[in-house]
Structure formats: structure tokens, C-alpha cells
Amino acid sequence: MADYAADGRAGRDIEEPADGDGVEGGETKAAPKSVTIAYIAESAGVSVPTVSKVLNGKSGVSADTRARVEELINRYGYRKPAGAGRSNVVELVFRELKDMWAVEIIRGVERVARQHRVGVMVSEFGLHDATTPIWEDTVSRRPNCVLSVAQLSEAEREQLTAKGIPFVVFDPIMELPDDVPFVGATNWSGGRAATRHLADLGHRRIAMIGGPEDQLCCSARLDGYRSALRSAGLAADPELVVHADLTREDGLTAARTLLDLPERPTAIFASNDLQALGVYQAAREVGLRIPADLSVVGFDDLPVVAWVDPPLTTVHQPLTEMAVAATELALTLGRGEQAPQVGLEIATTLTVRSSTAPPSAD
Image 1 (cartoon, rainbow, N blue to C red):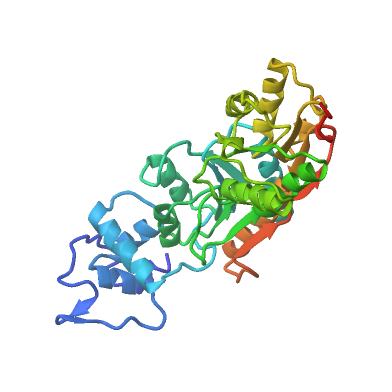
Image 2: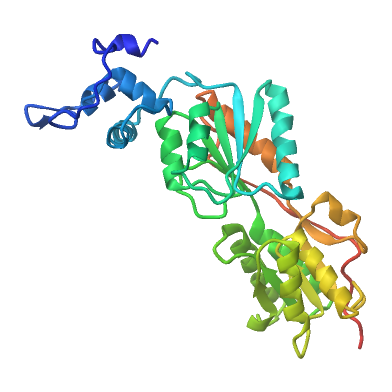
């Protein structure tokens, strides 16, 4: 309520625009050194309660007025006091919540939340975007901070910024502006380590099932694969790279294509463990034994792959540790403190099990 007291028009909810945007007598006003909610209201030609509604994601404000107020908030860099009006909750946002990968992330977030005695809310957006009511619900809940898995669009970042809600992107799949905080993994070095392991075993026809070409992490793993081939003196054969979604079913389809080649690969590096499980099924269909006839490497090191037959060699992506680091970073920003660094990449390591061996002499 302190914000309301700063403006004599607190009792009126005026949304009519003024003649100018922060102007008096046709001349632009200079912003004060410390921008207040009252200054934003005066510049937009609306009341303080209207600005407060925008900041808190409330309804009752026209689209034009909301856009005008948010533009001024962003222009002047207005921030509500750290934690003001926000709940003691971390909101963890997934686009798709459907496999074991998500469980490892939730485990890490929960670990930090318990230590800091904050709640965790998990949301799934699916294919919705920043204009849908689902996203508006997240903003209106006013979490302490948001941890968004894989992506956070420019529109979503602007909405959170306008409401004073800090955010961190977990394992981003696209390039982000330099000032957007994120936590990821060393995908390039992981892809290189997986391929180098196969080359060191003596494999010369090493295939890769790449992930979606527009995903940053998948592109980095593919680049690491190509780098390792060059280092081993092996040519990058385009027919040995097949792109597929990061699912077991799509890994199966891609592996069938690779194993149907006139000169099939003796080893396959999959962009994630689920694709690798699809490779296992494709190998069984054509009577190939792993690793005697075909070596397979995955990426992620989900708990289940240690129990398949044979146990899968894979790149360990420390999902739980990444989630811990991302949550700590988000809570630091939620307290209004300076983050020690904007971006953090946590090292991947190769976990060698029984799915890889030297190629057969046949």
C-alpha cells in the first residue's frame, strides 16, 4: 500500500492517456534518478493503482494501457523492492513434463527449496506461448522467482521483468541475450568425449543421431561429434548423421535408417538416452548384438540406463546439480542480490559401461 500513498490520485483508476508520454508542454520530462511507481503513473497518464495492477498481473486494465505502462517500466528500468508482493515460492516451468529427465531437475530444485524453506510449484505449458492465460496465471501468482526449463521467449522475459519477477533459464535450447541468467552443461565437450571414446576403441564408421537442429544443446553435441572425428582423422560422412526428436520412438526410427545403410555403422552416438534406447530396439530387430556388433553411447545418464541390458555407456549430464545451481541463482536474484555470474555451464563426464567395445573383426 505504500506505493499508493505516493500519488494523490490513488483513489481514481484513470486509464485515459495523457497528451504525451511523460511530457509537459510538448517537451519530454527528464526521468528522476530514482524512478517511482508514481512517476511511471504520471508518465503514462494513469493512476498509481493502474500501474500496480500491471505490475501485479491483475485484470481490469486495457491492452493499450497495459502495453504503455509496461513500455515505461522497461524504459526506466523500474523495479519493485526485492520480494515486494511476491510469494515465497519458486515456480519451475516445463514446456513438456513427461519423462525421467524432468524428475532429476525437480529433485535438484526441491533440495535447494527445502534448505531455504521456500515452496516449489511445477507448471507445464506444452505448446502455449506468452499470450495464453496459462502464462498469465504464472505472472499473477507472483512467485519469488521463475526457473524456466529450456526456453523463455522475449515476450515472457519482458512480462516477468515488468512484474519485477527474477528468472533463470535452465539448459537453454536457444541463444540468449548476454544479460539473461542461465545454467547449462558442457554439451560440446560431452559430444566430443562420446565420439572420441568410440574412435579410441577403433571404430571408423561412427554415426550420430542428432537432436532437433534448432536446439542449441543438440547443435553443440553435434559439433563436438564432428570435432572428435576430425581429431581422429575420420571424415564426417553426411549419411551417418540423422536428426530426430529426443524420444525413444524417434531414436528407433533414426536407428533403423542408419542400420539399413549398405555399409552400416559399427557405432552410434545418440543425442540423449531415450534415443539410445530406441537404438537398442532397432538393433534387436535386425539381430545385432550390443556391443559385439554395434556400440551405442547416449547422453544424460538417466538412472534407468544403468539397468538396461547391456548397461548404457553415456555422457553424464549432471541434471540434479544443474538444477541446484539454477535454483540457488534464482533465489539469489529473488532476494535482490547481485548474481556472482550471469551464465554457468557445469561439466559433463563420460560414464563407460557395457554398451561399447572395439568393433568386431568381421
